[in-house]
Amino acid sequence: MTATMRAERFYSDTKRVELEDVPIPEPGPGEVLVKVAFCGICHSDLSLINGTFPPQAPVVTQGHEASGTIAKLGPDVTGWAEGDRVVVAAGRPCQVCPNCRRGDLSNCQRIKLMAFAYDGAWAEYTVAQAVGLTRVPDNVPLEQAAILADAVSTPFGAVVRTGKVAVGESVGVWGVGGVGTHIVQLARLVGAVPVIAFDINPAVLERALELGADYAFDTRDDRLYERVAEITGGRMLDVAFDAVGLKVTFEQALSCVTVGGRLVGVGMSAESPTVGPTAMFGLTRKQVLGHLGYQNVDIETLTKLVSAGRLDLSRSISEIVALEDIHRGIEKLERQDGNPIRILVKP
Ligand SMILES: [Zn+2]
Ligand SMILES: [Zn+2]
Image (cartoon, rainbow, N blue to C red; front, side):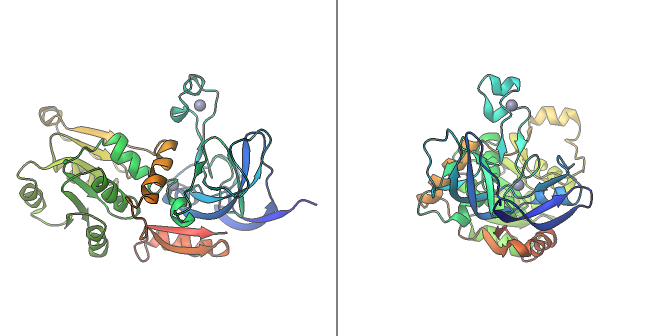
């Protein structure tokens, strides 16, 4: 008789998420079985449920932002032991595409995404490749470790890799919800000054100030441009992050970027913003950069920053729900009930 576990399974035909008993998976060569401690509920999980993202499998266990402890080693796994605290990588390089073959695994052209292409961690156990696991220092809570796999690492990638924010640069962040608050914190950590938060929600603007923004503005303010000019000595922003991805936020953020500055698009929607006349775009030499994700090594960097007390994620976990109550967590995220930064599932 095989042992079973509870898992929240998404069915692509009915678009339903169902709690089921399924066999505990067996780790293959190079893989480990991880007992899931916590797993985040991400907007991209909602996108699979509401049909914005096309399904990649008829049925899949969702959840791609997981921490836990190793429960069993598969054949040929060395350097890890049962009980080790880990963050699970949210994707698997294909190993066969041209980039993988030349050793550039982080730029895999056909990366398989956890919880989309293969089973994720809204379950008691999940199987992960040993390569790509990140060890969690003892003083980092597993709640905070879980969100390093996406909610904090995607902002890290935007600030450090795509935006390349340097010490002393002025930064603006449009939308300071789950992604944007972490952009604010990381921009401040790398030495940006000033860091300015933009949103329409007074509660999240106040929270952004508490988490390290120097200024916070309502984007509907008629004098917004003048205010940004005033606090940047007339220069405007070196780097703007659009964590929302609407036409209005993208274009407003771009208008607040200085000559030669960068706009990093992090949020996504179906809307089509414009960069305006190409003559002005060329004259102002603005750079518009699309952003997605992070590199797996960034998770380890973040565990060090949290462990050393440089990055405080104590406010990032808004709520923890039981696996049985996942629908409540999904609804709260959908409605932005209580302005959650991250809601976690505890299997
Ligand atoms: Zn995600
Ligand atoms: Zn590949």
